[in-house]
Length: 423
Image (cartoon, rainbow, N blue to C red; front, top):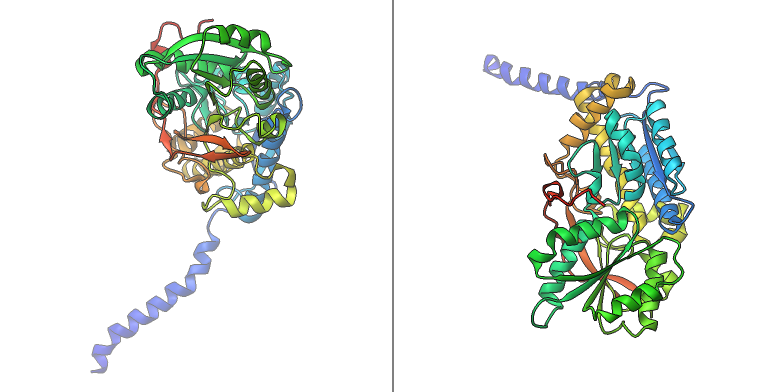
């Protein structure tokens, strides 16, 4: 009988040995030595004509990186070092900053706006330096190269809003008449491209396309032209300050209420309500690609904690959610790249490291949940948008309120249209 018990005793001893060795196995995981970091470049328009968005987004990027380094141990066991620059929403500064990021060994770079990434992308694409923009337009990645969109673009916004409008708001016979009022940069041009590609298919007639600057103080003249064409709906793709001007002028001209107003996601944020006033923007619709503050998602509590501790004035601004999530996506990309390529490859910087970031980082993203703060981030060959989902919102008593679930925006191959990329 004693002989029969020996195998069981051996098994028990082996199990005990395995348990004892577990701490040593954990100690073999990658651990950064002093000076070993993963460097990324980040720029936001924290001053200049888009500062009402950029300052909040810069805060969120850096607050999230503090959280990632302090509480998550960085990415793949290595701290993330951020080279942050205020672009001032200036083309020359963006170009200089992009080169600086490359020269200083950054593995990838981010921007807040589609305009910043447009100014940076020629330099970045030529070098193979990967960039990730929070807000995007089709022209930055159609056809796909080395620039990626964190979330759906302004063309996607227009398409999803137009679908919603046709199914839920439009009740008249025939085609509704839509006027576009667009910021004179990629924020506006992305929506224009979406309308050009999809309006006929959706049964919408575009009757006017007006442009404005980021510093406009009155759009009475342009709206008077629009009013003469009797639009059913006005779609604005801009930033909060100009959007507030346009909606105020539309009210003064007796156009609104009466027609529907829809906004792209760069327009519809807390800053718009603060600048225009809740009564002025009551009932306005818009598209946004993140959850709302207070939503029951895994990442809400920690983001709220850091926002209220470090930048309490940014609380309830959805641009903060956008850029906090952008930092989480960057950390996930770096984590995947460390795992797939190894720290030594990334530490060298330059073209080999940039290629590794794309091959083993960005292009290995598969349904990364971004702590539930926006749609899952996945790379799909031929589509450089990482998240594809948005929701429709309406401003009700000063609150930007979601009125639909998540809608996935289909990929549109703009390069197949002969007008795309031409002025």
